[in-house]
Amino acid sequence: MQKRHFIGASLVLALAAMAPLAQAQAWPSKPIRLVVPFPPGGAADLFARLVGAELAQSLGQPVVVDNRAGAGGNIGAREVANAAPDGYTIMLGTVGTHAINPTLYGNLPYDTRTAFVPIANVGSVPNVLVVNPALPVHSVAELTALAKARPGKLNMGSSGNGSSIHLSGELYKHMAQVRILHVPYRGGGAALTDLIGGQLDLMFDNLPTSLPHIAKGSLRALAVTGAQRSPKLPDVPTMAEAGVRGYESTAWSGLFAPAGTPDAIVQRLHAETIKALQNEKVRARYRELGADAPAMSQPAFAAFVGREYDKWAEVVKVSGARAD
Image (cartoon, rainbow, N blue to C red):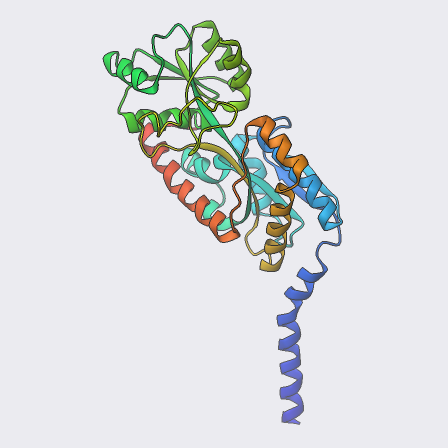
């Protein structure tokens, strides 16, 4: 009797241990919701739709992009943090939602570091340091010298407090030890218009939106903020090459799942995402945007997100930035 009881208990334990594996092997059996915590049309939304379409093909289930904008991405992120960890709700997270907002807002109802599992990097767009052509500078070194000669007199536009555009500028100010007045706008388009019109002196803008103005000569590009030069601006140096050593800032995006999602599902999503990014149609669209998608293993992407969290937490604190 005791032997039969032991065998029965062992079978129950074995079946319980196999349940998550069976669930992962059966996944996906229904559509997957891909939450984008921003409005349609931006770089993050575009990345989600390009990669999501490829994932739908390889996984055999629809991947439905669901834009849940608000509070700098926090509304959509909260939904995913609270979602069932079953692989059917994932999100397109960004440097904003997963590295900047935790310090910028300070009272999020979830811990970004523990509420999500990083899956895969899906793309990054460098910012570009642009100035009004009337400003008498043609390099980052000249801009730094002018800012030191006129402390607090130059003004720098951004798409809003705490945006990657704003904090790219704050990182430069901190590393170059210059005082420049920050002028936040409700969106990058308005700031760009005033920069072209001469109401602003400089701006760290997303590369795709500034490229047409650089080509026309209505803006002057001094440097790009990524680790490498952009193929779209091969003659423009990186910030590090221009003298601000160690500077790097990109508007990156990646896939994340709620904490507790089975590892087998996370690894499947990672593998299929890497495959999607190798699709020539996706690569061609990325090249048009000046975007990049460095191949990273899942642990490497998780480590990258951790480093970005620490870096931008320090920048937010030093800059004194607060959420709008």
